[in-house]
Length: 421
Image 1 (tube, rainbow, N blue to C red):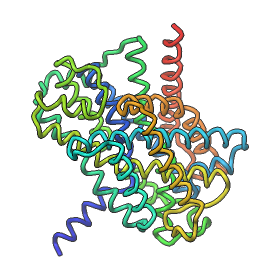
Image 2 (tube, helix red, strand yellow):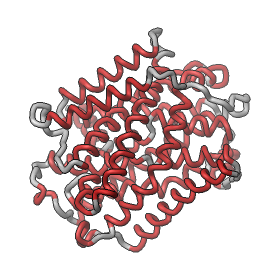
Image 3 (cartoon, rainbow, N blue to C red):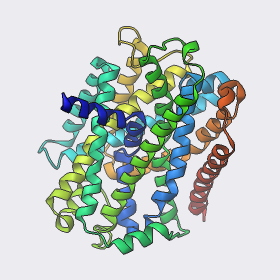
Image 4 (cartoon, rainbow, N blue to C red):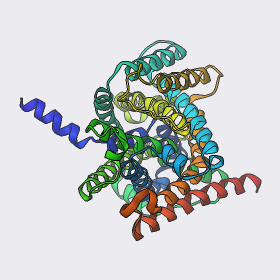
């Protein structure tokens, strides 16, 4: 009985915000942060605290849309903006989710290959099949519980970083004092870090999870979900804050683990997920290698369905239809068909011969280009009284939100400028 209460307590702490935070640290993000640490060492640790407030505000905005408006992000965009705004955003998000899911499946395959002597393509197919079966046959409560437990595996990166025995003084100094370079190599990794930490799929997922949670409470009709009490807004804010702090801590320790081991050893070019894990073995031991691989696998099983389901949410809502994980496949065939199609396309991309780790980093850069316009729309929506009512953005939310929007556009333009320069 005590054990059951203990598990329930853990699951209450690991809410939807932590699931979102864990999905934000998907294999794509792990690849990006590992590459950043390997290439620039501890000198790029400062990016974690800089990203934290931006991560909090964007996920808060998306959560508020679902909580207050009662619909997912793209359903809200469809209601409030013309089709010429909606359609490009749906296409961008849909394609981005497929690329990200494909890269993540490749990352899972490369990491699992360290533990299981099986061909990577076979692992990718088996992984995708298992994930889809859980989505198709599992209830919403089962999927949510699985996601919550999978989120906890990311603490493997904290342990791996501690095992590397970094110098505390160097760590603190590089965390608090930014070192910035204005060249294409540095800016591309900064944009990739912004893109992966503020990934577009996270927005749509969080807004829809707020709706799913309300449906789980019995609020199946839109009029029942409209609006939010002060206590509900506090609960949502707390959930988002905990989730983003969790995500930020993990990204910090991934950079720390690779920055203190791979960079000093001259392993600055990470080609595959397997190479990143294997390179840790002589520097931090076998345990660190297996912990790194286990983190990729565990969070991959969480993140891939977030992307495939998220793509289905985007398409269905963009077409003006409803989508919910509370619907059985027989009740919403189109929704589950889109999930299957996205899964198949993601698997198919893995047979085109791309390098898994490079694809992970490039998918982060692609996300960096899709983030600014979607964030702009979210800021406009959360300032509309007809959408938010009395829950429209306050002064500090607007200051932080518009600053984040400006930073994402600036990072994108700086990267483009370095290409031409």
